[in-house]
Length: 386
Image (tube, rainbow, N blue to C red; front, side, top):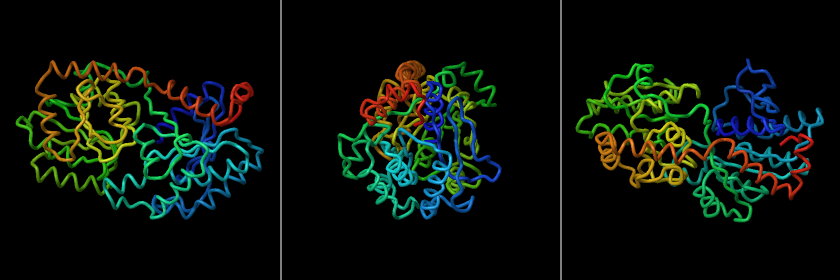
């Protein structure tokens, strides 16, 4: 979600459209206003303690909404479109949109009722599902990142089809592109014959335990190094995965890389023979798209937006079962057949080619134009804020 906001806002800003992103103060060293790019900025508002846990943030929505109202009114800020991202941003966005007479657009990025179906007890606030349902009912337009997410909104939240639009995620074509694999491996200090990559948060819903169990089943597992990129040392799931790796005898084959800056990710994608996304739930699957843009095949769960991002048999493989055996089978197939791996790599690069942030911004502008009932051409000429 953060990457989506950053990249689309920067792209809209480059086109002369002013974008303000309102978020909560969480670091005392942050200035209130941070320039994100041309015509785009992040504005921090005080709402609750800086270190408030994520599951407790909902109680501070009234104070955030009031801070949003005070900031915009005191500076005479008027918005032509208000787009709320995530369930916590939905209520303040609806309030601001109604007060300013602007269309209210909503994106969720993940949905509580889907998470509860695939892996219950996510630790989210108990009211999240009800708040999402209210947003789905009251927003003028709902923007999903995949056709699968749109269907979930219709089925689980009673969203109206005519209000639902799809704007998939994208990637930075100047950053994510193929490079020499051996060079990438030398830069990262990798020496194993085969490299298997996971990129994402260290959370149970990501299915990383399935990946580790699958690698433990490989006949030539001593030739494989597994890189887990994402998360921090204090993440509870990381400690569980480290214990599982010891139990499976994979401790020497596993590297916890931790969080990596966006500009360093291409080296990891290019160093890998295959990127694995065994998630129980993904609204889109940006990691899969970034890997594909680097020419790296993807083995992914047949869930959510991954079904649209990964083309089974062309840019990688989709696995319909959440168990290690089929992942081990696909890993054996990809790692053991260099001709197939090269064909999948070419297919991955080709499939990603038309999914850049520029095209995502085009899609968003079309959605905003529809929401504005044809007024967009006039607003764009005046540099209106969205």
